[in-house]
Length: 322
Image 1 (cartoon, rainbow, N blue to C red):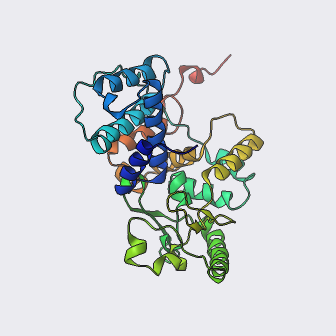
Image 2 (spheres, rainbow, N blue to C red):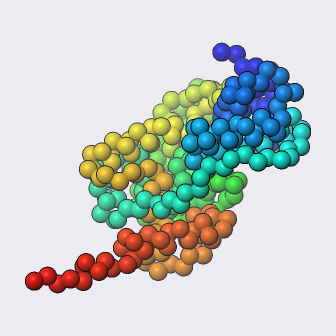
């Protein structure tokens, strides 16, 4: 189905501000949902009252989580500020009920049970999540130049909030990563020979350094086996693996492991942080490795240290029995 001129205008505004493609998809979803749910036929009908009604609908009738409601609000805030260029006043929507979630954390034994059932390259990807604390998208976006084999260091580019950071390179991944670099070198040579080889580059770097997009160092470490059409530029390129392939492999490995915990790629990031604190690293170091803006975000891991129930020994366990 062809996209409406208004939604093309929204996409143009998002790309003008160089928003991530995942953010673009999310914002466009919420804006279309808002238009349909509020039965808006003309941009002039969009106002604070309809925005308030939509956010209230999400909380009261859809029972969405606070994070989901905030995501919708951010999308519509972008719509009003940058697309419609209208001020927003008197937003008094019913807010989704705030819940405090304690992250799921695995023991070393549980991690190893999952790793046993992961083939490459997903084994190395999860080892990086567990051993370096990277998010799923940060793993997928790793480029050859981001791995420092000499210093045993990973550089995360444009992480959450657009920030760069450095973190540890797990020694257990060195051999596999060197193999992946060799693989992508062969694929890149083939792409160049067939008239391709350019890779997506952030911001306007492809124009500023026109030859760099075809260099090996900018290639994705976990590159897709086939070239594909870039959804933004329309060019045929070799992108990184699709997130769904990692998710599917991990779900299968968790099923085969027999674990009943709800385990996602992010679970291994939680486990990384918790195990660092357990071994005595200070919370500021962990905050820096995770890339958190506020130490309060990192402090949630102090609630899952050692035993359950915040380290309390149950009175029943003191009973020696008859």
